[in-house]
Length: 514
Image (cartoon, rainbow, N blue to C red; front, side, top):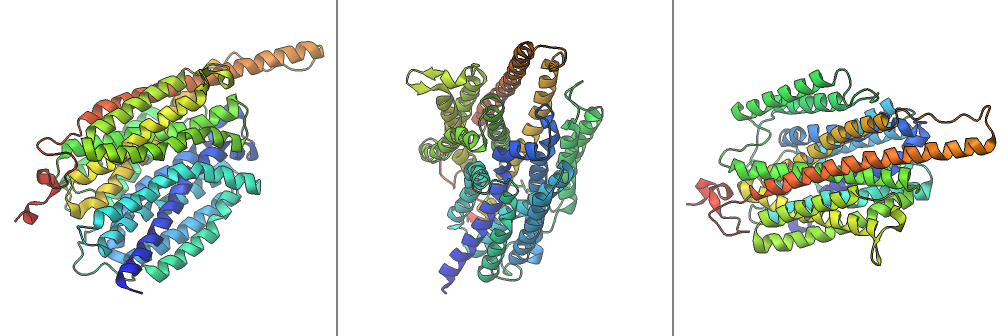
């Protein structure tokens, strides 16, 4: 096999494992109600399953930067194989879980293992391709990550529909992981990167500080009993401790010799603004994937497949707009498509927040309102994908494209993690606040007709409370997207033509200009 073919096979194997992990990052959104029902969690106690969502994301985000650096020391193939093995183990634990704690533990293991696959594969691209051709390969690997957000929810609903059991979603990972391990073993070169390849140390302290800070924030936002307040009794001190740890992490990254993300020689303003947009778009994306399906299941009374089909309107618009965003970015630069996408998504969430009680009958002329609103929102968030990636790559030297691309994904995953944690805490508290005075009728000492009437009134009041909860969550999400639109304008790099990688001192390191 020629070297050109072999390296394409190697990066194809790496891209496949990235897609496998990305699918599992989003797969749970459409099967969540099946999990809730199987574990006997009441519909008014959905907060108990929040750790299943946040556990995977926490492990994914915390592991991604650190394990990518570890691959420099132990080799790409060894790290990929180890991560795939742990991913399979986490999938088995998840499939065997009989309660939320074990289910969460399995998802955390999956997340930790899956989080390493993207940066290691990007580093592999850096090993196998010269700098000039590397961005195209990095873009293909990033596309595999993006594809997971589109296919993950549909994949989960499809497996449940075929197998009739949500656990099969995770059992099927075992043979898929075994095939991936064989492909990695055959195609990825063994040993460490070549002697001439750039090699960094491992920022263990930075990785642990990032993981600890995020874990404290998520733990402080999780409230198993939201009747009294949005945060648990320990919430404020734990969230404050998480903020302090993340501040220490930021200070460490400024002073450390080896860093998770080296910003030396980089225009920090545009880069940090871009990462902020990625963070906010991630929060909006996760809210959509979770809450639109919950609206379909709890308000519209649809099953898991019908709920996934409702979400399809959004998911189809997302990649279509991503392609359009790439075209616009090439012609206009990054900041205008990015700002337009966030503004359009803000408008979409405002429309969703205004959904009426009779959503099935609502329309804009001949077009169903639900379909139009979800397509508008998907187009908005999709427009952001390409300019965010392009702006991050423009902001850093080519030798750090892999780390920078991973940083954009980390920022989005952090948005997903903290966004769903915070908005879930608020939403569950508001639901209990809205239903605090409701009492289900008891069929004792009451005629059957009277019981049926009171039960119907009770169910209608619960539905009103659910709609109010979702409306407020989508209004907050619209506000986040509006902030993202303003922040996107700060990503503009002045002094050069849009789309040219050589513009500015950050794009080309000084030694390469000679």
